[in-house]
Structure formats: C-alpha cells, structure tokens
Image (cartoon, rainbow, N blue to C red):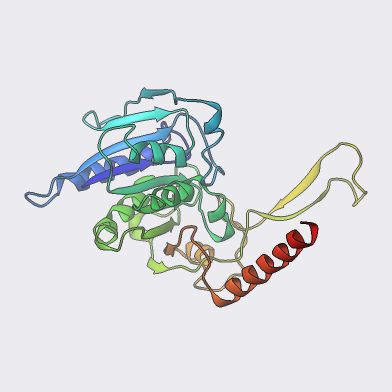
Length: 283
C-alpha cells in the first residue's frame, strides 16, 4: 500500500508535516505481510484556491522539483514541485516519482473547505485529480486560527484510512475539523455540502456607482472562508454548521462524471437536433 500525500499550502506548511507524521506512524502499524509506504509530493509554494487546475502544462515540457526535508521523517521521500496540487498528484500517479500510489491524501489545509468552496479548493482538487485515474482519496482541512491543532486533524484523517482503502475505487472523502483539541471535539458526523460560498456578494466599491473604465470591485465573503464565518443560515447537518458546533464533518464527494439523468439526456438530444437543423440549413 503506497500513500501519496500532497497539499495546496506548499511543502513547508505545518499541516502537511502533521499529516505526513500521522500517516508515517500508520504505515508502521501495518499487518504482517502487508507493507505500507509513504511519498510526499507537494507544491513548492501556496496554491490555495487552485481547484483541480494543472496550469499551462502545454507551455512547458518538464516540471522543476527539489527534495524537501520533513523534520523527524528522514526516511520519508518528499518532493517540492513547481506544480499545482492536482498536477503534483498526476505526476505522482503517472510514474514521475516512483511506483504508482494506491491512495491520495491532501492536507491538512489551513482553513475549512465547506460549502461551495469545495469547487475551488486545491486540497479537494488534488483528490479529484487522483480519482480521475482510479484512486480513492481524502481531503482534510481544519478551521483556521493561530496555532491550529493540525495534529488533531491529521490523527482523525488516518483513523478513516482503512475504511477508505476498503471502499470501492474512486471513493472520495472531505473531512473538515474544528480548531479544537481532541478531547474537546464533540465527535464526527456526516456533513452535507451547504450552499455557503467563499464570495457572498460583489459590487462596485463606492456607493453603487456604475463601473467605469477601471477601478475596484468589492467582495463580501460568506461563511465558507478559512476561519469559518457566520453559519446561522445553515441546517444543523450542513458541513459548516457541524464544524461551528464542535463536530468534525465527513462528506463523501463525487468527481466529474457524465450526467446520465433523464432530464439531461433529453436536453442534449434537443440541443443536438437544433444544431443539426442549423447545419443542414446552411449546408
């Protein structure tokens, strides 16, 4: 069992070190005859908000890297790449750094990834990229505060590893943890993705004046921000509300896939018919 760890905060982030340390300890508890190993492949700088982007890969034929040292984990291979989290995962899976991994872990992210922010998260984007190549994955994030207990979130993450490994391929979990010590946590619950977003409103900076040729557009942030904002409009089982209440939230995710629902199929058939008639008319 080979585990690939990445993040979107960069190879020097404390959350990555915490997750690597907890996972390394998990590898040492492997049953006899079932070896476990760990490789860390992370961006060389912060890629927060990158989603599953791989950047302009067509504009270059290689990716710069350097070995990175994780304190206390001298035996663990760790590489810092000039690449987004998703691209780090693709490189790790497709043979760029040793054997193909079996599972992807991403985090521990400094800030929650709840609500619609999962669409933009580089942490979540990393495991989504892995799922496109058949791997299951876990994205783990913690509510941002000064001196956040990353080790608590990392320990919770490895506690679900065995279940994730036993699950069907491409199973994805999103784990969000409040900034609490382990004894303060009220538990872990299945969280629903709320409608909360990072950006709640956008508008001209000054008094609603029409936009000119240049200037600034103001942003008002919602509850899905790293420190977790106002969740008063969320349902109790929504992911942000659970974190605010002192629970860790575990949510199964689904990667990009073809929409085969009847309504979508009817819509695409109608669109194909309309385009075909247009092409025939101008032919």
